[in-house]
Length: 129
Image (cartoon, rainbow, N blue to C red):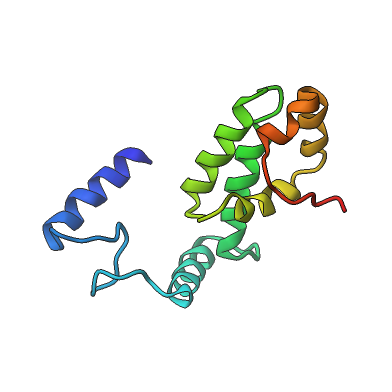
């Protein structure tokens, strides 16, 4: 995937050498959500019969990452920050939505970390209340 993105970046740099957006529209601005939705549907249903939406892939990306965090100890906070940045979230609270979708992960982390749980996952809401 990285190789493909590098090829894309090189090709786009020739078309829009000073672009600010990695996947720009023709005005070097972000695409509207409806554009992403339409493009995804067109490509998805060209090759698939199963029903889905583009955000399902985003949810899967987040959940698959979070599921890898068990038995990692204090790396969890760093992983949460990295996941948050990779998803374009401005706060960790936004990323915690995905964290809440992974069953029992909060309990596993709390059991492993004990009193330091709030240091690993600071200032974030408790989704079990």
